[in-house]
Amino acid sequence: MTKLIIITLLTLLISSCTDINQTENKIVEIENLRAENDSLKKIVSEINNKYVFDSIFVKTSNNPENTLKLNSDYKMDIMIVGYNLDKSYLVAYDKENDEKINLDTLSHKKGIYKYNTKLTNDLNKVFIDLHVENEYGQKVMGTLMDHIKIKN
Image (cartoon, rainbow, N blue to C red; front, side):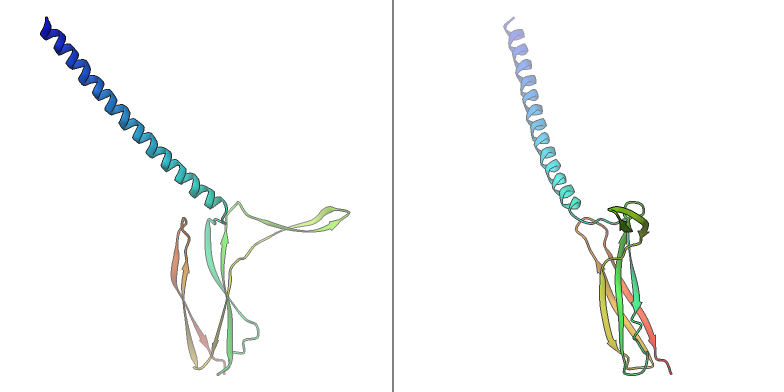
């Protein structure tokens, strides 16, 4: 009878230790999930304070004053344009008696870089390294290359 009581007590003791270990493991797991949740909330909060675009592209625009003559200056604007397919828009309008009239939705552009060079050859090559980076979004990297031919 004594052996049966000892075996029963040992079984209960072992199972209670297992329950305590499982409880401690669950507490640690919950603490880890809370920490992960807090860091994700921080990331979402930072992203909510930034402009996030579905897509970006690079557009170049030559200055209308460029003569394309030998030893002349050549100017170009390089624009990085970001947009969201259906989430962003601008509307222009006139005001008449504090009412908006002649509403017109506009396309938008952002991020203009100025490039200047001197045209010293009949065919001038332009190379520009492009790096658009963000801590959370996709990175865009590449090389822009253009040929500028002198007019005779």
